[in-house]
Length: 150
Image (cartoon, rainbow, N blue to C red; front, side):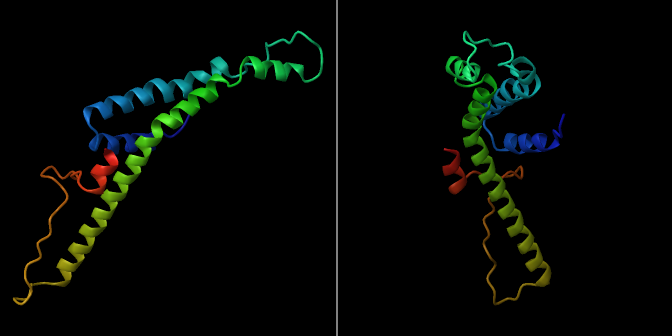
């Protein structure tokens, strides 16, 4: 069917920075929307127009009658709903991943600088470097990250 490892990694990252309500929301969204759409929707609503009959024999009437009776298919409607509902979450996740990667790069640069400087010179004052991680190693939500979440 597909590779679900990417989705698993994405959800793990989301769970790390989500509240309880956010965790429930993602679970409901993915289980009851995406999995149902991917597993059952094509079989249920896959060929909606084959059994539809029009009351005239005019060419092209069947398509027009069907479009008038059912302006949007169920599969397209569910896909559109999923896109609109999950877009804010995906934007937030993208921002969180960006912030985390920036901090990792900053940490790598600081480690490289520390290795270059074997001993700090007495003239240099010690640098006060506030970390944006909490005691469990997770990124604290402050500044732009907190504003994006709210």
